[in-house]
Image 1 (cartoon, rainbow, N blue to C red):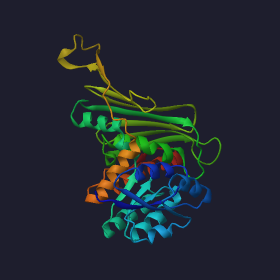
Image 2: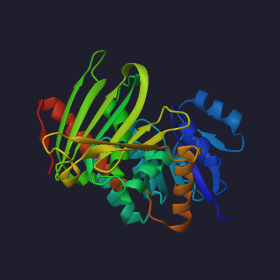
Image 3: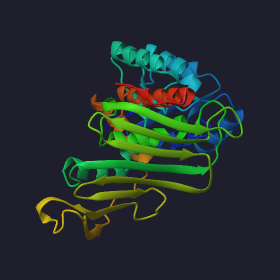
Image 4: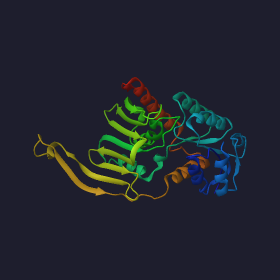
Length: 335
């Protein structure tokens, strides 16, 4: 099997998870890793002593042997680091959100195309087995016409200083939504949020309207006493509930809904359909491991990424419109 020579920038909060899942892949040869913190480096060196560590990211970009660079650093640093990696002729996998602005994302996408390199974005939930199954059932027509999308992602902390709760958490819900709806079809964005302990929004409600009238609602919070990760996708023929906290039965498919048309005995009163509940068998493999394997396969065989820079840009456009909606206290028309 052809291996891919990999370098990692950022070994802080999320970086070790990315590092661990990539280095575990048979096709990954982790050559170098860097972090500004000597303490972070020492922790990783104790676990993976064969890797060459440095406090200088430039040591990774300048190494001609490295083909793929993994970047897990604060959002504000993504643009310069991804730019340097692409200019050095590397493929790049960057933690979400892709960068801090639409303009930066557009430059990075153009640069990747110019250099003939892949730009991957860590929208991990696109690889989650439950989300993959949701997408499969949607594409097979099992849900019928989509009615609405409602997602809740709340927990206590971690309150961040350089980004708000939407940019931190809602990225995941927008990723799940994008597996069934094209985010470029969003016409209106309405968002309300509050900041209690600093300048960053800690609790937010995001409402999206699509050009076909479909509506999506996302609730995110850093100030919840309990952790909740639940997504409802309702269709005319079936409905799904994805509970990521549930240890074994993460996805339930409900044969429930409202009966309409000729089948209704009394047109003035709705009739409800209550059928079976299906709990699909799902892979228990770690989602980030699935993502790592796919990214490496794309680099090895020049395949199309499941999550590209363009996908990252589509979510940035929604987040930017949501920020504007909160600032102006009004609905933002985006299409």
